[in-house]
Amino acid sequence: MNQTSQTNQSTQHLDPDTLNAFIDGELSPIQQQGIEQHLAACHACTLRVLSATQLKAATSRAGHRFAPPPEALARLTASLHDQQAQTKQQSQIRSAGRIYSIRPAAWATLAAAILLAISLLGWRQLHQTNTLAAELLDQHLATLSSAATPQVISTDRHTVKPWFQGRLPFSFNLPDTSALPPDTTLKGADLAYLNGQPAALLLFTLHKHEVSIFITQRSTSPAFIALPSTRAGFNLRTATTPDLRIVAVSNVNSADLDNLVAVLVQTQAPVN
Amino acid sequence: MFNAEPLPVFSAASSIPRTLRLTEALRIMPPITTRSRDFEQLALPLFASLYNHAHWLTRDPSEAEDLVQESFSKALRAFDTFQPGTNFKAWIFRILRNTFLTTRTGIAASRTVFLEDQPSTLDTASAGPTPEDILLRLDNQAALHAALEQLPPQLREVLLLCDVEEIKYKDIAAILDVPIGTVMSRISRARTTLRQLLQPQLGKSL
Image 1: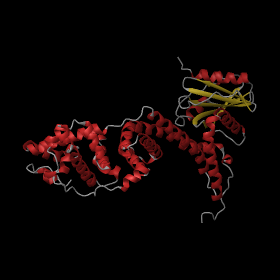
Image 2: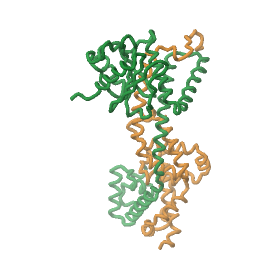
Image 3: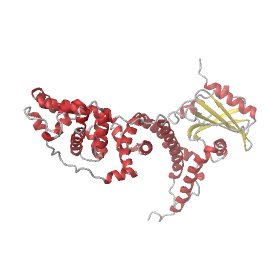
Image 4: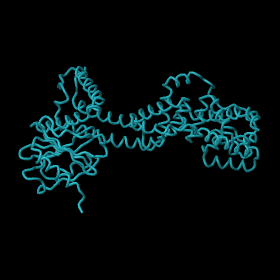
């Protein structure tokens, strides 16, 4: 600051910029010391500093004037969460498109897909149950295709569970092979997205039927609505633990599916 | 031309192997969740301050709320560009101000130029009431509200950032997009003008 030379001379009165910088705490310790020396000897400048400090404090009090309406914060957080949900959805769609170079003509298709996804977001507020059931079924059907290989192919829970570390914002337990219902095998696992939330997808075979188990975190999916128990001939089962939500999809009979879900729920209980 | 070589054409996203989609999604998903949480932790405590400032800028409660909401939304989208360790408050106040300048009220306000920014040439000897006079009447909140309202918006803004929000000169300079010298001269002028505005009421309150 160009006032340094002046303020160091303790005989010179403070110019307005220096005085302001002084009361705003913007000066270096050396500059500040120079001013304090001057103030000790100059009554007029001391009064000016005192008055300026008072004015600053009064401005601060008077400036804190408008408090937001009580429900404004809730409105804000709601709109932020909507925005976050949309961003997540769009980034999933974008990520699917980014893998390949796309001919300019194909951009139109992609744009249409994004638009469709955005409008779906609005639509699914009304038809969330159906949409979620369809989403589950689609993901389950995708695992049935012979071309689809899960990211982890293993029957060993000690291989499957650690794979999710760092990939999911939560953890869960897997039952030991001996604890599984008869004729049930863990085939592998994958990462999936359900209702816009990351989910662990566990693939089992039960009496030669494929079973998809989706595990999501309860706290991040509050809008999870009760699912129909069947859809397009497949059984859907939902169970919850204090932290997790488990959804099973399969065409195996209801009793066997219930059994497997019950085992998974039990496994999540803390070991005493 | 980038189209010279034949490129593979994929008619729909569904033809992409599922594992590939997930790998890609994996790279993008977790940061978004943590990022939004970080953003909310930094931004929500500033809500009341931003609302107060927005109200001073817009002079209207519902416009102020809209402005704050739009600023939060923009800030969340641009949160990637925020550098951790730098002043978040200054960053989001800058977004608030720039958002305000694109509103109808903001455009109208920016058309009105009140004072030239120039080095302070004010004569302190003739700058109005003596400090003692001011001391007598600073407890008069209503007078200060009135004086702040009469202050030219450009000067009121800098004073609110400095005295109410307690933001440093260099950060105010970044918010207003002006050199630090301009911030200093505006603060000097704002306080001198505020004193002059308080002066006529001196007789009434004594």
